[in-house]
Image (tube, rainbow, N blue to C red; front, top):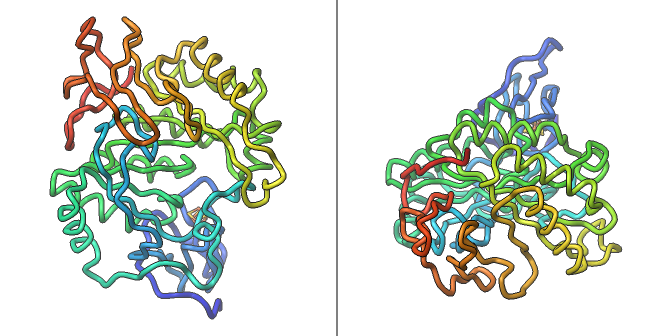
Length: 355
Ligand code: SF4
């Protein structure tokens, strides 16, 4: 028995396994088979007496009021604030992890464990802070899904949508359980070869591709982020394949190409050169994506939303700040009347999903 096993809440998405006393977690692509008294790969779900428990329910290792642009979501309630929470654990093992203390915390978990009435109390916090949404972020929400689902359900009762910032590696069953309370996602598409996913992230490209497509079909507003790591996922051929895939799902799908900085076990790799980011942006536009943003790098225009029809700047951004926004809640360009894809009005109002 793992003596450091904290108590938790009964988990969803699992089944008893055929091996005596083991359980199979069905929350993500790993489908961990977990013997009695042990945890799954993510360290946040454990087999206690033949039942699967979520160990991090109620842990808020990070809790902050952020601009929605920080997620990043640029076509979802721009300029709004989102109350953001993350709990310990992760189902990937990215070499360049930017939140290593949170994703692999060891036995001493960071953050505060809130009392049993956590969900309604945190939703009161959201209301008090004038938050326009909840975001489940910082770590991977799949590994604290019970907590995230309960918070999102309570937020939905208060008219607030929720957001998942995710590596997109959950099982289809988990993804189908999220809308309508979860109205938007930023999904990492970290590269475009299985070898990259396996060796650099410990993940599965096929699972992420499937889930981006499934999330769109479920009517969730989706934006995609790719961290461009020099020498690992930045070849023109790989970026061509990645952006052609996104454009085949929807040319309206916003793509954020993000600058890498040395971290964790990739501290020996240089920051992404600016010309590489611009090359990636050009490949995305050439493949038909209408909204391509450059993140983690400050240069005028990198974060602006431009009308794909008349080319006028509709939303000008500097970092996470909005300098101007000419789009109304209907998302129509005031200059040429083109419809700009997005969920522009606050609240749980579903505009057109990308087609
Ligand atoms: S959520 Fe955790 S325990 Fe469940 S399959 Fe994924 S890594 Fe394993």
